[in-house]
Length: 218
Image (cartoon, rainbow, N blue to C red; front, top):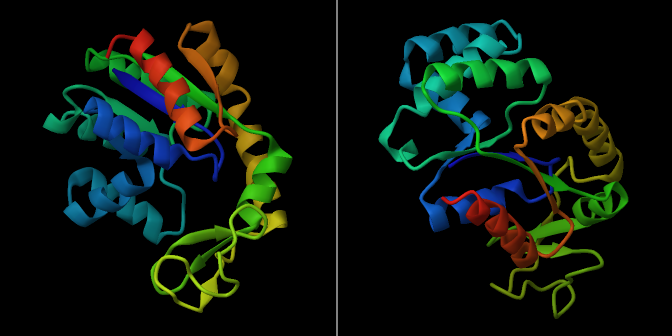
């Protein structure tokens, strides 16, 4: 089964993609990771991407789609793949469909992890972590049992990501909605779109996604 996970930063796509990867033998394809790997490999596509990036330009849709086409030809994609971070526009979706058709493949499901923007802003902007071990906490939802002391390792220093603030999160959400809104009717028209509640607990989202995947007969 070939899947796309749609959802804004902080919706939990990575967590759910990992579950699908381990539970169903699907390859998790993050476009950011693929791009870094292609550049490091020195392949033709990687060299083209590196040249564009060194000029400070965005990697073109053609290069991204060629990179994905190369990646899905590997053995770990035999049972299918999960695309995370692509497509972001209808033009990219059309190019991806065309490439997959040439490879004799197609998308089975596009899973939208729908979120409540205000709740997601609260979820992300309140995050902080232990500097020593990386254990995660939240200002309101999960504070250390002993204030100022990590539950996991006893560390006393904590940090926050610079982009985990309300204004940055709102900007990223607005960009996501602007880019993604046209993709929903595109995939709905093809009967591929399924929507899950991205604000539910990790286990509940996992169960909703599992139901979508199992309905597709992985």
